[in-house]
Length: 104
Image (cartoon, rainbow, N blue to C red):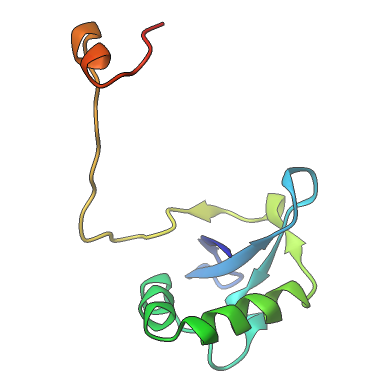
């Protein structure tokens, strides 16, 4: 299940499930998923971790619903306030080689 965050019709941040392939993608919004769909992505992740079967059911529900156009949405960062950001930089050739990375 691929999750996106976007601005909803009222201008508030919300989330949805991205459906389809690259050529024909659409979004099933949180509002379409029913009353038990969490209000935030963070709550979705927490509930999905605690109840994997529920998360699978939610994904199945999303697959059966109509999608809205992805191009009509204003996308936001998937996790608007992450607790931690981890990055890895390979900023010089010798370091890249040490890690087994190819240098262009």
